[in-house]
Image (cartoon, rainbow, N blue to C red; front, side, top):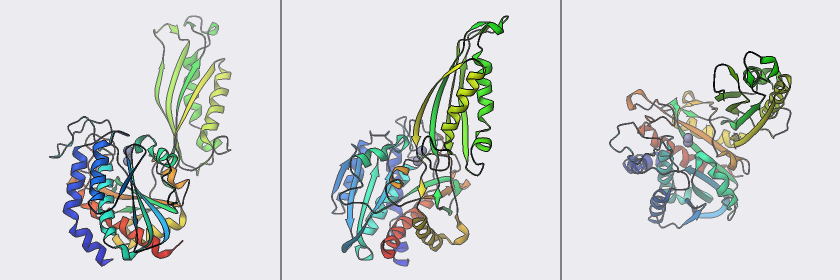
Length: 393
Ligand SMILES: [Zn+2]
Ligand SMILES: [Zn+2]
């Protein structure tokens, strides 16, 4: 849309200034006090009112000239990470926290999209609920939902995006179905019976038991779960023992289990359910017992197929068919909570560019973005919103 792309171009400088300001002042989840204030002041300067939800979350409503249509939720996450920044950028953070995931970009893009849409209220029939969400890194979305962000007015659909360094600048990743992983983290304490390494038969050795648990768990995906369902089971901690001639009493294993599909605990295809069964049976074989603690951190973001089709049409119109790819990741994302309640669509805006030094992984102390990709994210947000209202529900 020519009118929109012209407006996005006109706002580029302000967009970059906003992003740099957020970047220089990162705040952790539910501590985003300055961030929320900057967001509120910006929105209020456009003549709109704001509401606080979930302590540091900010919500604003924008209706079209004709407000009789559906309600679309647009979400940007606003939290930073406990990472000491090493980018050397002139606007780098000096407070020991860092926007190392790109949420500074999300806020700047969404505020700019809000401004442009507020000047084009004749282009949509219905209401947009802009949601600036705290604490994405630790499931803040659900807190906003628990506090009623999907009601009053009732939300009919949701869109969100992530600026994404695994994809090159100029590429947009869109896919129907699961695009980010469900994730369970686990801690397993394997209890045996300690003893003398000269008399191993009189002990119950938790070390050889733990080793077998790790090896046996590798077969979960193909032998217990359909190999077409992607799983990543990783052990990050293996701890046990005090001396080379002592069989310890126990060994602790910790790790994460990610799976790129949606399922409920106890279901046939739930990898964590299989994992627990397997750990218990291996431990029984070695005469040990296991205490298994599981924490479910994220559900998979599952894109609604008709929302994905709509977003894909917009993306193709912006960057051409050859630059729109199907993309999914084993990273977690709490936008999943919106998709469990309403049809939702989560896109990836590529930002990797050698010249901009923006090829580092997310959460890395050297992570940065290619600022040239910010306008594309704004245009994608604005045009996807307009296309949603045009299509009708
Ligand atoms: Zn992150
Ligand atoms: Zn993120």
